[in-house]
View (cartoon, rainbow, N blue to C red):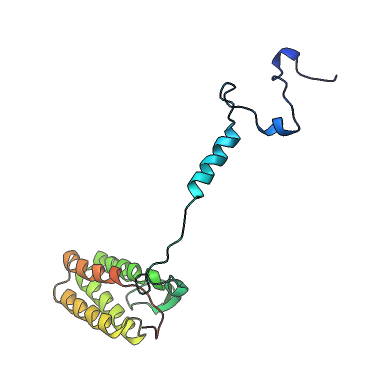
Length: 170
């Protein structure tokens, strides 16, 4: 034979074909193989599983509405290149929050101006339903009266609670 390994380093011989090839005992005394054990565990996990649908109206079916890309005009004070931002509907709240926080780095009045820009933009583009839009405007006015990080938290909490739905949907 043309074997590069000496006989002493060779593993114990075992059958490579037939039934005995896939059922080598993990513990020679047990008689049960690893293959048998893992198959039994997988069968146990899958027995009796059923998928229960939630009652209608309980959970909204996730649609692609949250991933719709919106084109939002930038505030006049935003020095980024180009007049528009491309934002996914599900990221709109984070987008507005981050831009207002950037406004705080300039001044509190700038942050109020940026929030005013986004309040007008959401109204003009009709991105929110009527109830949400009036609430957003009310919070924006309260924030503009005394712009601070603490007063912005209420606006941010409101924005994070919004869920995108398809236009015209009930």
